[in-house]
Structure formats: C-alpha cells, structure tokens
Image (cartoon, rainbow, N blue to C red; front, side, top):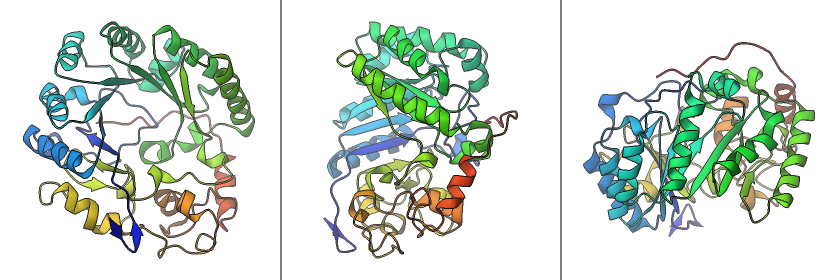
Length: 361
C-alpha cells in the first residue's frame, strides 16, 4: 500500500486500551490526564469487530491494556474474541484485581501471554510507587499462577531515579518468578510522567551505571531470560524510531474507540482522530488525517529533511517534539543534531525530591 508517496507495510500490532480504570496510581502512567469514562468504553461486539478488521489488515498480535484490563467484567469475552479473530493475545496487567480463577478462565479461552508490571524489587518501595499497599504481594502471587498455568510471562519494570539502582535485583526477581523476559523500561515522559518528571528523572551517573549493568546481565544470563532495555530518551544521542515510524507498524485504540498512531498522540492538538464506531479499522489505517499527518518525509524540517537517518528514525517522536518545543514537525529535541537539544539537556539535569503526583482514575 502507498500513502503520501511512501509504501506502508501492514501493521503488525494493535494496542487495545480496554479501559482507563486502574486501582494503581503510578506517577509515570502513560494514560492521558483526562481519562475516558466507563460509560464511553467500547462494548464487546465492537472490540470483536475491531479484532477481525485488524487481522484482515495483517495485524498478528493484540496487546490488551488499560488502565487495568481486569476492571472489565467482560474481559473473558474480549480475550475470546481476539482468539476467534486469529490474533496472538498479550494481557498487560497490574495483577491487582485479576483473580486466579479469572486468569485460569482467560487461559482456557485462548490467552497467549501475560505481562505484569512490578514497580521495584523492594516491597515497600514498590507499593509506594504504585500508590497501593499490598500491590507487590499480589503481583508476585499472580505471576506464579501465570507460570503454573504454562503461560509465557514477561515482567515489566519501569525504571526511574527511585529504583534504577536495583536493576540487578529486579532482574533476579523476574527470574525467581519464572519469567522468560523482563523489560527494563525507562520512564517515557508523557501523561502523568510529564507531571512528575523532576521527581522521576535519573542522573547521568545512574543511567551510565544502569546501561553497563544491563549489558553485563545480558551476558551472564544469556539463555536463561531475555532482557529488553533501551537508553532513556533524555540521555540518548539519537531519537528512537517512535512505534517503528508514525503510522507504519502499529495502531492504538483508546477505551472510547479513537484510533491513534501512538499512545500519546492526543497531546498534539491539531490532529483529527477517527473512531472505530464511525469508520472501519482499515479505512482509518489507510486514510485518517491523524495517520496521514507524519507519514513519509514531506512534513520534515531541517535537520531531519536532509539527514541520512531520516528513513531509520523517522525524525523521532512527534509527541515529544510538541511537548518540549511546541512544534510537532520539529526534530525530536532528544537528537543531538536538533537546535533544541539544549532543552533536553537542561531538563535531564533537573532533579527534585518531592512527593509524586499520583495518577487518579
């Protein structure tokens, strides 16, 4: 398929945000500050249609996320509809509110994989970060149940100044729980994380030590567990190819049915997002204004337009460019070639020991 003169591959992944409801209050939550209401959430029949349309587009896997997906009483029906559409399903859960019985039922109807977020290897710190006393114990218990059922388990560890020193302990915890993969996910400063940036931002010394530790752990634990990790944006020299390039690899459907090129895209005020209640997923992927906005390179400004890497990093993150410099078409200021790179360097140096502004439902 060709759009804006550029050949666009079929999307591979669909992030299905089933709800914004969540029992946790993580200060780095990537959900928007204005959350979709329960009454606006898509019903099962619409999700089932979306999954079938996604499969027809070429999507191979669906990530069932939130909020907390288990807040949906019809989660079993949603998972079954993903299986019926021929999609590989990954449940992204806080593990709080998901019972063992529901997990067993989800496995019975075809759930393929579970990803559990754990905030720290230290129980008191983990509960403090999550804003929920007892969360750590529930996560450990459910993780063991996942492995007991024979489902593949990934542990997601969001890393920031309060826990970055315990990366080896977090990887060891993941191993002890029987995980086959652990994601060392440095905080991305969108949504609630942007509100807490100074409280969450690690120091350069912490980041350099963490990068070295991860490389050492990968070598030591090769064949025992897969460790996924990337350098945090504010300390990188080049920007990441956000979601594999805008409108190139994935789609994000919000609880109320808006379809986004990435989970943070709604921060860009002039974009028009189509809804699955009014358009098919295929029509949205091919023709919606939001997906068309930053495909190809015609929109790019210098230094991106003439950069040799423009077909690899696609100019970096559009949301980050807007949030930091007020222009979604600017080079991602994370890039050291951007004229706005000093903005990122300054923000990375700002550290404040202050209470978290917790995410609230």
